[in-house]
Amino acid sequence: MELRSGSRLRSSRHQQLGLPRGAAPDRISALPDDLLLLVLARLPCAAAAARTGVLSRRWRGLWAHLRQIVLHDTELGSIEPALGRVCPAVSLLKIHVPEPPEQVDADSVNSLLRAAARLEPEELFFHLSPYLFGPFPVVDLPCFRRATSIALHMFSAIRVPAGVEFPALETLCLSCCNDAFDSLLSSCPRLRTLKLDGIVLNETSLRVHSPSLLELVVDLRFTHSVSIVAPALKQLTVSFTTSKLCIISVSAPMVEKVSWNCCYYYGVHVVFGLWYLEQVTLQTAERQGQLPSLHIRASAGSTVVHDDADNFAHEVEKHMVATFSVLDLRLTTYGHAFGALVFHLLGMDRIRTAMRRLKVVLQRLVEEGCESDCPCEPTHWRSQTVSLTALEEVEINGFEGEDHEFDFLKLIVRCAPMLKRMILKLSWESSESNDVCTKISKFFRTFSSLDCCAHHSSGEVYVWHE
Image (tube, rainbow, N blue to C red):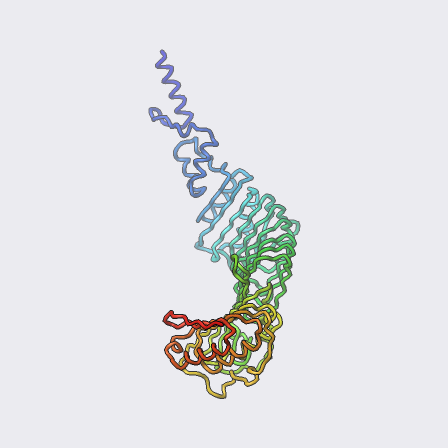
């Protein structure tokens, strides 16, 4: 009698767990929901969690109660029905849609975003293939009231309808087409971090104004106008390419760390005689003992462009969005003299008064020098007087030992009363020339008050000091 009763109990328990008669008991399915959800949370995505329903009826639909929903490489048409089964107030919603066989319209994406908003995620990652959309799509961003972090990666313009707000949002990452950041930022009163990666600006103008922003990271393909007003900003990282003269305005009085980089597209006429401006980078110190630096890359052309001689310096000055004490010049000379260009830059007030260290890296790329009447050699630059009162150290990499290079060094010494150290790193050709080494030795002995050293291409170092 007792055996028959036990048999009936076991049979009843098997039926509750959805097991066939005679099957071994499923002790995992008998665990509480909270423990089963911990098991499901370790699976890579929601689709894998949903497939556990084939194990028994006990697991069916349980995935919809997960706090983190990840839909990776899921067909677009099946995402919205799946989201309709998920319980709201999730901690994470991550959606990645692969490239579909056909393009979809913005209405389908808007509907999907509204379905995502109904789940009220704390963190949202929304990634759509750039091949999803037709030409010039515009997507309306719905309200995510609980979201503290949103990352949107999609090749479309984002519009924020009137009345939409993101009261809890602290981190926003965008990779899309956009221009109207004002309406978006004004709806994020608590925004602390803004990252714009691969942004395409329809009007080639970036405007970021936010009173709460602490960190701004920008990576733009093309723009010529940047306007940043962020009174609380602590960290600024900007990288962009321009095909025009820049318009730059940065107001960030509290900024502590800056990484600023602008590349000039080939053909932009930012010139000084033969020299074309290619890149300007400004970097604050990243570690203790490192000095903030301004890096300028320029290349000598084959012909003189008759343009405003001051536009080179004016363009460089636009990128001085933070203080610096090192000037690093990377010059592709093609054998041309560089003294006139360097002293044109050293004559700028913000450079000559702040520069403690000057580094010039020379790339010749050709064996022949320029002709005697070459326009790279205006005679007046050797007689310039520029007060370099802060300059303490000069380093020249790729030193060839040409007469114009020694003239440059003499002028530096004359203009820098606080100069303490000079370093010459010789090119391979000048290292092999006894004549050049003799001239360097004679030059250094003339200025015996300086600590001087010459680095031979073989690795040997020759030192002269008082």
